[in-house]
Image (cartoon, rainbow, N blue to C red; front, side, top):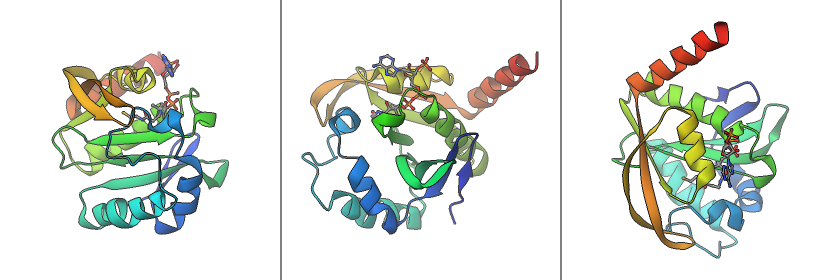
Length: 189
Ligand SMILES: CC(C)(COP(=O)(O)OP(=O)(O)OC[C@H]1O[C@@H](n2cnc3c(N)ncnc32)[C@H](O)[C@@H]1OP(=O)(O)O)[C@@H](O)C(=O)NCCC(=O)NCCS
């Protein structure tokens, strides 16, 4: 059973098939997909969210290879504004996320990641989190930077918008705990 998550502003709910219409309505926007890996079909088909849930996300949640949550504002819990996922068994891609552009730049994904990182390290017991991204994806880089991740690899990868310089960022369990402890001591000072 994958639990719900709660943060100051957000409710994270395990993905369910019933989420397909809302995801289909929000996800297929160029601002969201342009720096996602080329496995995302584009143009996005009308049944894209339904197929993704049935064929990818829900089977991964069943088998324990993927942990997927919809992101909702705690104040508007019926409305999906994004998704976040963890993949503890993958080599270089342990976390993925996207947010409705209308809700970006308010610190919400940083908040969701803090919860997801805790789940990844403290509940799943993983020791290392790696997150790939397009080098041009400054918002995603910033989310990683803000939470103490390190750039460990650069290369090239195929994205929805074509072949681009790519990066892998890393965070160990120890680094995450130290980062949280530092923040706590600054907040308490
Ligand atoms: C990446 C993404 C999830 C960030 O979500 P968010 O809720 O806006 O993130 P936050 O507000 O927590 O933090 C974003 C940071 O990037 C900064 N930022 C956002 N857009 C930026 C840009 N174009 N250039 C530079 N910095 C940018 C913000 O100012 C903020 O930094 P700050 O807190 O120092 O001011 C969102 O942009 C998104 O959904 N992008 C499309 C999907 C995607 O690329 N997913 C990641 C694939 S690796």
